[in-house]
Image (cartoon, protein in one colour):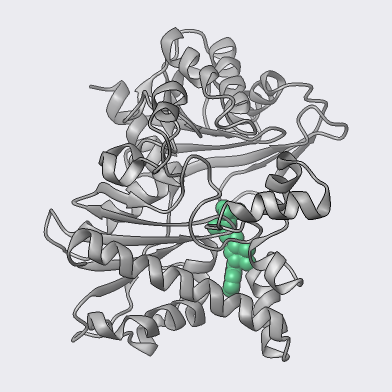
Length: 397
Ligand code: ADP
């Protein structure tokens, strides 16, 4: 059985075709500049050179058609016809307060995705376009929506409610949702399997990419997660501030004569490690600058580690213990120094990193010492595979 996984951004479409017999990637690719001049598709098939098509893609519909043509092409394709695709799984950013799990798409599901446009203005419209493009290109084929917010829907009220007038929750569903849910779900479950932990293990996952979030889960069910109504809350990220005192918004708006939308743009795009260091949002650049003596870069990195360590401490308290701490995503998978610095805060938990085991990148591995009281692991995230597994489970029941 083959599952097609689609991840649509506002001007991009990423796809993977996964053979679920052995969970191998048969083909993957990226459509860029959809709706912009110079759109192109880059298709990759293992063992073959990249196949690039430069062709106008005014909407996601044309992009999906090109992807189908690439997948079924006699020269570069991997399937004879789209009949070989069992179902399509779509990454959808926001499922609002309605969906706690992935679901087979029907008109009601599309309505909810549409209703969440204001909660996910950049992603939800694109996600819906991707679904509708697949419906048009492959009539009758089942599409599954896998929401980035589903994992966070496992939180209890005490974790997801903000201490603001309750009417805003009732009227507008203002609450904490959490994001990177597919990654947190995948990594926390994988940690239990790979780390041979008990079924109801208490796991903290640090998803440290350009966007970053930390989650606490028991037996793979979310207890708490650091992002909130939108992906701005929580730890320090590449360009996002994470937690701030909301008074800052009013204070800066008044002084700089800007409005709240401009302020939010600053908090989303010009803050985080970029804003603190003034160097870059890429942790490699900031690390290099710090090593060369750039003080702001060093303080940025120190603050980044410190905030993550604080979240780990808070989540350990929230769960009354922790069995495993996992690192994943761009920084978490590649930056051994960052993992080491964060774990240096956790001596009180009996966390001990094994330097030699930690000397790896992007590989599933226990990186703590045998006598560490908490297992520390590197678990590479694989959101596409998680989406494919959800899609298969829902469409072949
Ligand atoms: P996203 O999916 O949120 O865009 P990724 O998970 O791909 O992000 O992570 C991208 C980030 O990973 C970049 O900001 C980059 O700085 C960081 N990164 C990648 N490799 C390394 C490395 N070797 N050391 C430190 N950071 C790295």
